[in-house]
Image 1 (cartoon, rainbow, N blue to C red):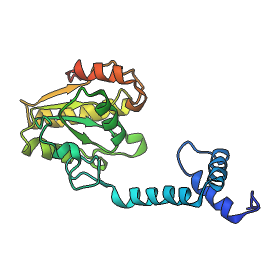
Image 2 (cartoon, one colour):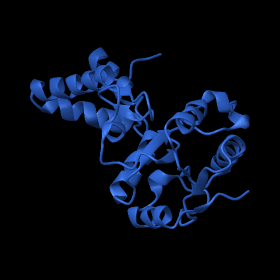
Image 3 (cartoon, rainbow, N blue to C red):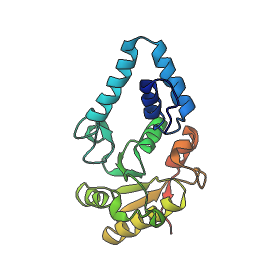
Length: 205
């Protein structure tokens, strides 16, 4: 393949930056040229921050949220309501809900949604660990907050059926449909998400 730029180092930098989501080659080139105009220490700082992120971040052993320690700050906090678990698809959803300041319980990050079309089965996401938490942690309510897509509904139904069969007295709710059908939580404004949490309803088929 013919080299686009007259510098192998610039070509390598652009290729690396363009692998980031939402960053095309034009944007990557703009970033690379910007860094060339700055002090070398600034580029080194950015590079070191990325290395520190990749090496220092782990996943909480309880809820699977990102953490710098074995337990994330939410799971280790004594101020949270430990009898309620909010089930979300990914880490970004935790961040969105926390910004609303309307929820004081714990979280459970599934790490994906059931999607037979994409070959994602229940065993591929953190459903079994959710069952174990409900069995051992005196959980009184599970809130299903996985958005309003077909995959989310499939996942919600699977979790509801499993938990309701094993723990008939467990309260299982879902966030109210203030979240538009087809939308991901990360694209939902904070006010709508806050109302959806406070107006959650019993899960229904």
